[in-house]
Length: 103
Image (cartoon, rainbow, N blue to C red; front, side, top):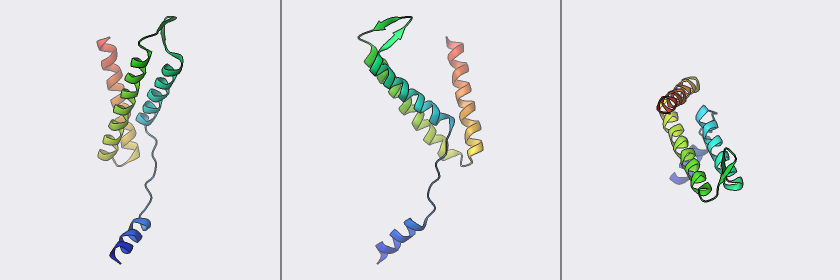
């Protein structure tokens, strides 16, 4: 009987709502890019990297997984969607600035 009550409580709870965030788009971009590299190979300035295409594709899959985990972490800290967007866009901007400074 107690198990039935627990099941009823779980079914009555509000369904979680799906929120689109900037890091969702970044994750999708990395996975699509990895798939494209696996299918067509990596090409920079017209030359094909025959032996490195798989490695480069795996690196982009790793980027996608890391960005996905960061998105989950940010979702746990910021409940409001507006604050979540501001924090994630600020994070992406910070990463781009550091990338261009190092480059």
